[in-house]
Every structure is written in structure tokens, then in C-alpha cells.
Amino acid sequence: MARRSHLSPRERDREGTLVRIMGFMKHFRSRSKLRDKEKDLHQQHFFPAVYTGPDRISRLPEKVLRLIFQNVCPHSTDETYESSESSIVSDGCMLCDLRDLANCSKTRRQWYPIASGLLYHSIRIDAVHYCELEEIFSEKRRRKSRNHEAVDTPTARLQLLCRTVRDNQYCASAVQFLKLPYMTRETSKADLARTVSVLPNLLYVDLPEGFFTGDPSCHTLRQELQVRCPHIRKMKYEAGAEQSLELLLQRHWQDLQILEISKLRVEPTILRQVLASLPVIRNLTISDMPWLESSIFQSNQMIPEFPALHTLTLNRAPGITADGLVQYLSRSDTRGSLRILKLKECSGIPVSTLHSVLWAASHLVELSIIAQVANSLPLEPIPPLQSISLKTLHFEITSISSNQHSLYPPALSYYNYLTNSLMSNSLPALRELYVRDPDFPESLTLAPPIVPFADSPQHAPRGFHQQLEVFSKGLDELEWVYTSVMPSEGPGRRGSMSGGRPLSAYTASKGLGAHWGGEARKSVVVGNGFGGFLAVPADDERPRTAGSLSGGGSRGSWVPGHASREHRGSKADLWR
Image (cartoon, rainbow, N blue to C red; front, top):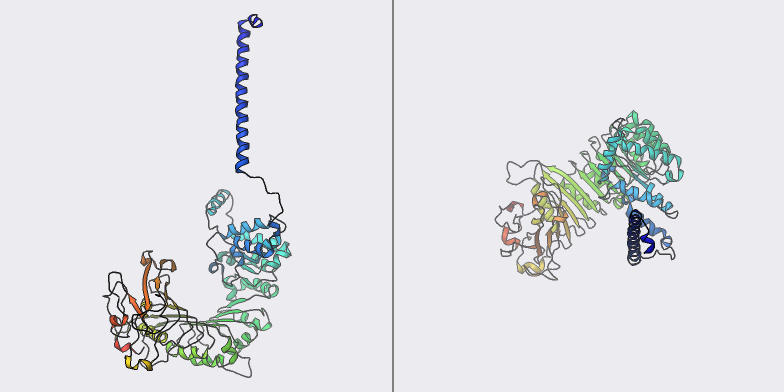
């Protein structure tokens, strides 16, 4: 105090100010230390120590890593021979998935061979991101292109891919599938030719339309593909590519499995020779070739036989008849190999003759017939469709116009014929059925004609006994409506059930059209014990059998909740 008393007032004020500043700094340091202690305590409780034990990730087998990477980038497993527009395998963003898989290949040395193999196995170049990043990137490209020419992004990606596979032989040998946007393959033919020229194991590539019609602008691309890519599995030839088709006689693309020919004008002898030169062909599609007749299937000692196929598709080929197909299926090798037969607008093979083809194709598992009819089926009895191997049936018959002498559309008789074939249990292996009649699933609720009880021991119960999935669609619908029908397990009294209560449900999640309003519509279909079904109406109505609604076995139109609809059947249609 004595020393302080000798200080001048100015010196005492300066000393007081210094003391206050030091006290403030001390308080600040104490608060900083307190925050550091709280931070250390927070890290201690909420952030555990880093694992320092053995590396478990390095012990994952290659099979598990491959499965993980396949889920990271689902389209890397796409091995379909379909175009880029038809082979989208997921709802995500393909470009983002590709970026994630590329990052995985750079994470660990152990992961690189597996991830890079998937990265280049099935390549897909997309024009845009299918996520919010596309808006961000498009804005950046717009800003950069104010003073420069706009960049074609897919073409730039194809050029980068070309540079990569030409510099890296390992990546080039891994490429088996290459899929491009439509405009890219149409405008970048030179870049595409340089790319495929170094892909020796390529199985499928999206090609421009001119490649299939013999366009001279695709000559270089065709030469590179024939010389450098001998393992191509799918090819198509259209009008103008007759000479290119004949080049197959020079043993190009001996691994071709899928061949599509359309609107060609070639001699039947040359066509037979070309088909015989492809040793592993499995799938043949013939479209818009009216000159082609059933004689193409005839045996001739001078030319090779028509090849045995797994899948045969005929589109608008009126010269091919049912007798010609039966003759083709009379050979043991063709009868045993044909599994899928598709007929579209083939006037030479009407539905009335389809039973003979189905009977001859003893190993057929899928049949598709698509036709527009102007007249009903003939009045003569027709044998039902019979097959013990058929599992999927596309019976898509539509009416061109209603007959002036009938109140019903011509297609109705065809669906009555199909119902009769099902109820006679002639298709015991059938599991999936596609029809273009929205009322067809409800027609299955109609019971067949009831025989007298006195004669019942002499008659076997009618109806099918397997679970059947019916997909129906009308002319004004865009999506298939799914119905699952499970009949009763065995015979019994009308309306009785055994072993539970089988159901049939119309559900919105299976593909209802927009006219349903997005809500699920359910109807109950139970077996009646006589091979038919018991239709259960709405909750406020009394259950009645289908026979009591329509007055017999003819096709009616009663729908649950709409019992007053106009009757659609007729006694003249009973035999169908």
C-alpha cells in the first residue's frame, strides 16, 4: 500500500486497467479449459475408440464381395440381349451406381479385380442422371457453354470409354455387353467402330438402324464387328440387308443364338442354307414376309433341314399354316426342342386349328397367339386346346368390329372356347394366362352344366384343379389386371368347401389401371365342389352360385356388387 501511495494518479489508473485485463483473460482461459474438458468427455462417451484388431473386411471371400458390388451397381449384371431402352434393371440412377462401383474399385487393392471386372462386364452409357444431380450438372454445363459449344455428354462418355479400352487390354477383354442411347449409336458410328474393334469377347452391342438395313454408312462398323467380335449372339436383318444375310454363309458369327429377319426378299433355299450355317441358333423371329410359305419346313435331300429351335416367333406371316407347323414338329429333334411359340396376326394359323399345333408340340411351355378377328368361331365342334406341358398362355384375341347379325363381339366365342378348354381340364400344367377380355376372370366363376345326381357316378367332375394366375386387360387399359384363382380341392356338394376357403383378389399393387382410382378391389372366388366356383357378392347381398345367376353353364356377366348387369351369354354358345 505504501508503494501504491507513491504512484501518481495516472500510474494508478494504468495499473488498475492492467489488473482488470489480466482477470478477464484468466476467466477466458478457464472457460476454454472447461469447454475442452467437456469436449473430451463427449468424445469419450459418444465416439468409441477405433477398432485396431484384425481386418475382417480383407477376409471376405470373393463371392461375397462380388455379391456386394452387384448390389451397389445392379445394371452391371444385365446380360440380356435387349436394347438400352428395354433393359433397365432398376429404378435407381445408373450413372450414380456406376460412380459408386468405380469408387469401390479404388478403395482397396483387393477389391480392384472384382469391382473392375463388374465395371466393364456390362457397360451402359446413359444420357442423363435419373436423380437430382442431373439438374445440378445441367446448370453447370449451361454456364460453361455460354461462350463455348454445347458438349454432347453421351458421345463424350463413349469417346472416354474408347480411349480406356484401347489403352487397357484387361478392361477391353472384360467387356461383353455394351448398351448406348439411341441418338449416340446413330450419330457416333465411327467412335463405336473404334470401340468394338478392341473388344474380342463382346456378345451384344446396341447398333444403329442402318446396320440392319445395309446402309453404306455402317460398312466400317460391320467389318470391324465381323472381324474383331466373333462371339456376337444376336443379329437382325431387315429390308435391304439381303447381301449382309448371305455373308453368314462365310461362317461369320458362329455363336449367333438369336436371329430376327423382317421384310427380306431372299430365295427359300438360301434362307435354309443360312439358318443351317448357324450351329447354335435357338431363337428365330420372322416378320412381314408374306412370300414365305409352309414349304420352308419340308425335308429336301439337296438342302439342310430347317433347324430345331427353342423359340419360334411368326409375325404377319400368312403363308405359314398350321399343317406346316405340324409337319415341322413331326421331327423328333424339333418336337423335343421347341419350348416357346409366338404367333401374331398369322391368318394361316387361325384359332380353330391351334389345337393341332399344340398337340404336336409336346414339350411346349409357352404359347402366344395375338389376333384381331372379324367373325366368330365356326359352328362345327372344335377339339379343346390340350397340352400337358403348357405353363404360360397369351390368348390375346380382339374384335375388329361387331358382326351385324350378332349382339356379341366376335371375340366372345373365342374366349368361350378357351373357357371350355380350361373347364375340361385339358391344360393341367397351365399357371399363367393373359387375355384381352376384362370380364374373362369373372367368367370362370360360372359353373359348368350340372349333370343329374343319378348319373353323377358316371361322369367325372369338370374344371381345372391347379392354381391359375389370370392377367386381363381391355382395349382402353394400359396395365394388366391380376387375378389369382384357386379351385376347390375335390368334389362335394354345391357351395361346400374343403380344406379352407380359397380366394381370388384384385389388388392395386399388381397393376390395376387408372380407372380403378388406385384402390384395391377384391372379389372372392371359392370352389363349389363340382369343378366350378361359388361367386360371393358384396357384404350386403346373399351369396349365390354362378349357375343360379346365369341359368346354366353359359357365360354370364354377374360381377360382385353388380348383380343387375345385362346377361352376356346365350344358349347358342353353350357348346363352346
